[in-house]
Length: 117
Length: 108
Image 1 (spheres, helix red, strand yellow):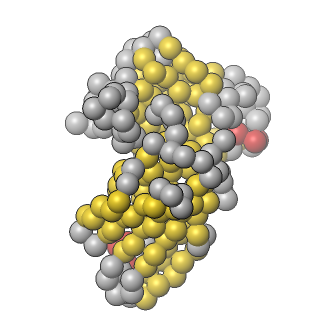
Image 2 (tube, chains in turn orange, green):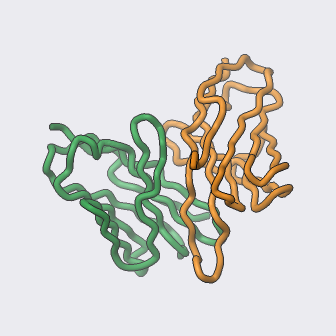
């Protein structure tokens, strides 16, 4: 199993350009997440999804959009990139919490390093 | 919002030393997670715990629910342990709240 994969690994954009980051998981997980990691700050949740066709805002959603058309894929879009969106982006997935497993491990992708000039 | 504080921010140790990284949080949680981020960037889960203590190889994680505090210990540290160690808590649902990480360097 590949686990969680992200494409691309690196990208440089100019201010105002758009792009889409793709996250794919082969573990049949219901939940998927997009985080950004900035120096001196913990990982921060951008958007998440609890199932195919559903998305929700996290802590820092502004400037990003997401879609979950297929269970195994979670896309993160930047419509008009800004230098403040220069960051490392991580995707993660997990099984939902159930009574038998009240907390669950998140599995992370390798990250995408994005620079916006 | 659950605040997660880690200490120290940076740690340098000689190979073989016993290492402790601390994590404290502000409100009750359902679980606490310790994660390791390798120099190449990948993040892996080390432990999930809601009470007591867990051990895996040279790594030991403890949690004190009353004091809202957890520690990650590394015995007989090795240069390959050099990484960033991240504490995260889950409060309700599957959402994680992350600390800023502790950067560990183990010198041969």
